[in-house]
Picture 1 (cartoon, rainbow, N blue to C red):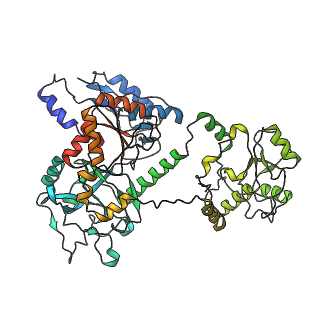
Picture 2 (cartoon, rainbow, N blue to C red):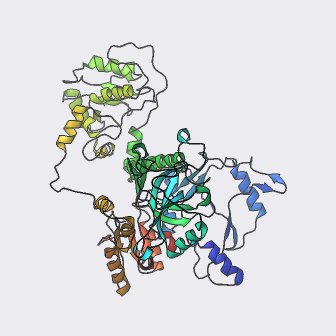
Picture 3 (cartoon, rainbow, N blue to C red):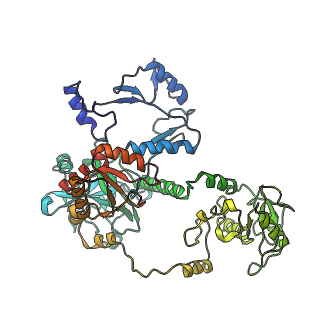
Length: 581
């Protein structure tokens, strides 16, 4: 082999055929990686633990280098062990990791927390590959004239909106970008003779429902349509999900959808449904939010973990009766509070009332701050507060944090109550080592990520926001309004929305820069630009080095070569970045 590395998805069939003709070929060849053993010596092993099945696998299989190998694994016990492995995934352009519980049994056709996929999250990508069935087609113009240039994809509706026709679909998105001439030819071959012209006066409502159906309108009406059972499934990538989109029956669609592969192994029955899409979207949003809150600095992370302990509330304290606490709960269960002062106007609570509030919600009142886990509450600068400030060993929080915790718990009635994280506005005094510990719980304007704000506080937040003199606008949205898909998917717009750094020197590098600008992207002068979505290298060796350099970023850019840029130009569309690997 010339290079000892895994090639990208979609190359297996080509190289397998070439290797069959010449088994000594120095080029890429199929490699079988065995990761589990389910049946050995006439015995079913699915009910054995993964650790035991692994032992059976090792005892039964002899490795043949780069032809037939047992898949390697790394033991991990905490989240910090996963991050360096995920960086390797980015550096090697692999798809992702699978984390497995060594005590888990093998469950057929099941998804559970014992096996979890972890994928790198690249800049400007939704993060999920979507397998969508084609339900309509649109004829192109110009060099694509006379042929279908883009396709309408659909999702099976939620169960409560399903009809007697199991193939009934909701329109979901329109995709044409990313397809090569070969891809178009293959789709044309697989669907030839199966298309039906769309009749606007008599649309196939028993098969497809378009956006605008409530008003008897037909948004994104295709030129031709096809039954799902006679159609193909496309694998699609997108930048993000657009909500409240009336053009499609699903009421949402994909931003910048791109074709990445033709899924011949799937049909309309195994394609994406409305319900599975919402599940994928919710999971992706949850993972992205968790990543945004992550603190990279290990010291801050440890300090924050000690204070920001999430408490789930179970049951309520029925022994305490108080007119101040509202519904009694175990909100502060197991926590110690040192109440130094009451709360001045507008809260207007005495020290005794605050202590009663804490006890009514499961907390303990102490008379000193000597214990490290004691939370100090007070305001102003009386002698006791001044003394704590001088010592600099304890944080002091304002009384309104207590009241806001109780108020949020009442708002979240019926759901598990959790403590609000401390915000800068809650802090009267903070220790030197905690200087930046509370800033991550609000946005740049002071709006809490975890707490509902009332009208008065929202008005104050809006009033304090800086006024922007420039009338900013989204150029991509304006282009979507003005131009047809044939234009937006064409060479002059194929890189729109991207921020690209072209690395290196030479005539081929300068040519790539000109193509990048022509195709609607913005050029980044430096690799230090955190908004970079793509890095273009002069060769594959340089690209591998750049992947290693950028792998540690929170959202690493895609690293490609000038070959990807030029091939996209020749095909007239932005190709999948993994197609050249």
